[in-house]
Image (cartoon, rainbow, N blue to C red; front, side, top):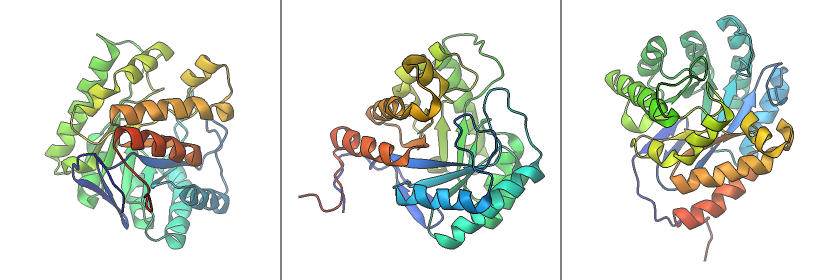
Length: 285
């Protein structure tokens, strides 16, 4: 058992996993099945991608997020059929090897969600908030959703975090209206999407306001360009910078961090959660 000073706010059920909110910060491991990932970690061979997902699980990922369309700046959207062909073999293979794994599909397309669900995915992570048709599919399949803030361009009609929170509140309200339960609606402020580097820093500075909305929260800063501008490092060398934002996320009360480097993130949240949430690992005396 673990000891925790956190308050329980329901739990997330994904596949064979139940993750109580408020106990600790969970780690979502990234599995990019694309040829053009911004961080250079994309794997196009389905067997190799499945092995990567298993490795992320073994490194301590609580959730595995499989995506088949790059979201790097200037990326070209792909047809749903292409995305399905990329992610379904990986999700199917992963589900066969780790039947209790909490598998997410990173998509904004209802057809991809449906195909991924049939293969074993039980959560959808959408980089375009909560589109109506995707909400309908998620509600029908009874899967949780991560709704991320995004927009075209970096112009805002007020302080960036004010605008981000209004957008996410709208996403959450529409998800609730579709019958998705409160604890199954996760909100992500969208670091690196529709924001300048300074705007990303402003959002990170005010993460407590995101948490105060009362819904579970997700933060994805891993290897993002803002960290590169701050440190002068290339994507693969932004592990320490990502860990810094991970610790800040835990301090703010964020529930899930989405990362490439799972082992580093697990160490960061273990230490930060011990301080912030009074969490202790199993076997602690």
